[in-house]
Image (cartoon, rainbow, N blue to C red; front, side):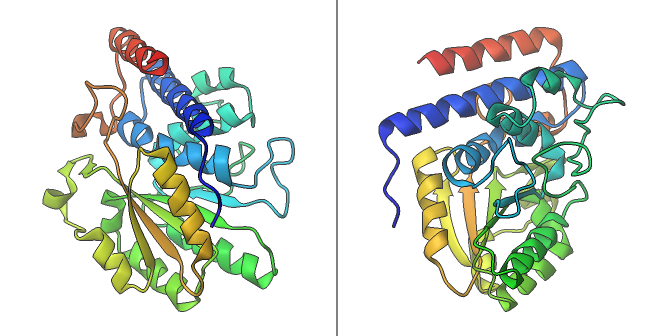
Length: 281
């Protein structure tokens, strides 16, 4: 088992996550379009992956031996873009071009446009299938690279997710680690009321995945779960991460309306000041 992160490392990762959240609010406001709620809820997961775990190099984004990441809930592209910019894949200034017609930062990730994107996503339910294919390809190539993916909890209502779940378990893809961003809300309201995928951990266990339940905003817990997943042999791992939609901006937290709504300029100033205060605490 890998050593735990030091408190200094956790503090640095928390700073990265806050910077990523700051960028998310800025870019969605500038675009006046996008999905802030589910981007903010996933920030700690992507921070831990990109800054504490994954083998990726901004100076060589197509390295054959790199780990792969698939944002299955592609509408949360702002969190991926902000993370890649924070990591140094492209200049942070470019974040403010989100969703412009001539921008590399389209509303959903495109692997043709931007370094660091391993799979184009956006149609919900398809990302896990792509991630499973990448994991199988890595095995066939005798590669040590690992594959990570993040799904939304509302996305679990898509049937294709469960086909991919069967596929990954059948082929014993133990180099595949998935996260469910379990914030409990989708665009139309609580997932339990729209088309309940509950209970989530029990479903994945029934599909023969190794399941870990964590607080999705606890950096150490996220890191520990990833390390545990690397020790599991013969089956993929699903990390069910309990999160808060809109995390970090109190006016957005646990409110479904912020799934796909941009802040006004005035709201943006207030939200950014909140995030600044959290970073200095």
